Image (cartoon, rainbow, N blue to C red; front, side, top):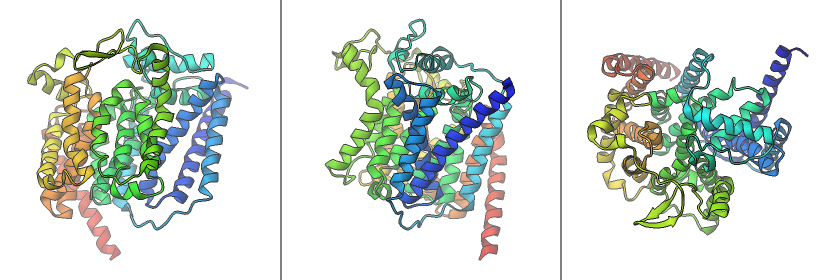
Length: 492
């Protein structure tokens, strides 16, 4: 067999494995839950990544990690989903995402794919990917087991941190035996982020069209769209965070998958990296008065502990510190001993420096986009002020960004916007709800959201041109809404 034929066979194997997992997840969710394709897509992306994670971790813990064991584990879990699904029956599916949401989904997929094709010859360039994300995955595959990958020359915290992102890299790396596709490990996560953000927006009261446009406005913004071609794990943290938060809504918390949905998303979020812990306080804002008994909370905690716990348990058993080598102090007293003391970045000491980090560096949010987002979110806070203490999602979206930014300024070890991804995600949802509440007209609100989505998409790769492109974005948004209005009128 020549090299080209072997490569085609390996690529076919990768496509087949992912196809089996995705179709099994879709079939399971079709039988297990109410809702429409947007709901199943939001749950499906989390379920697919759960299977990928387990397909690497289960044989890796047993010392038999390889292409065959990964594939066998993935197929086993896929068959298990199909088997369980046969005993379930979905109820009514009252929500209909509609053509506008479908068009937004297609646009996001096309945008990400086009970007990946454009940068297809770009090698792995980010420091984190070169120093531990890819080397850790390669080391696991070579040794056949998950182990500590020493990176003392760079940052020893990465040696002991949860490395869920590297498990996803190993999933893409092993069948092909090269990094051709693994380099774009976050590209599908950007699409997944659109699904969960659109779902959160809809659980906040937005129409499917408005929620879909909010999702586009987020994932095409510069921090996220640039991350789609970087081999990191920050988009995964944001996606699993939003998935867990959306699962706390009144509707989703009551269905049969309620606690499982939240527990799996929380576990995967905490399995990504230590800094994912910064998202827990924001998530806790949405957990009040949810009405779950101890059994459902046990499911949540059990799923989270089963998925993410082994990373922290290993450190606790070996070093007496679950977040080793980082020392943890509470009110000046040492709680867990470590060899590193995390200090806030020196670039976050003044308002001028903070503004530059947020709007001018490589992964920053363009100033025009940030201003529009913050103003819309403030409108949401003002309009929904009376519901902050009675509605858990309103509380999380209103207060969460403040908590997230505060934790970033207080404890962020690096002055990089990627640590704010969860806060930016829910702030964008708040912007969408705020615009619709302030305008109080569906068509005018959709026009403004279309403009916001066009603004972020057009400035995603061209920082500094936001105000120039804003009128263009508004015109494009108005045209989209006008075409959709004509279509609906013809259907009537």
